[in-house]
Length: 85
Image (cartoon, rainbow, N blue to C red; front, side, top):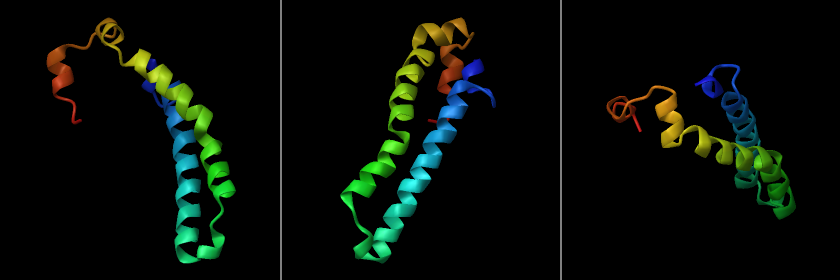
């Protein structure tokens, strides 16, 4: 499934979301250390950084990981059951 390759769309989106989550986490850590840092507006800015990517990615991934798509890619139910979820 090319979407999951190192240069695939899902990988790029995961990288963007992780960057946003790291920024979000860093801000929350700053707020924890100094309550003066807290700003709802800044929190929303941090969340907005990866919002569109997250929603677009979730929509696309539902299609990619759907039963028909997995069958076309050659996955069997037995193989899917071996994945560590």
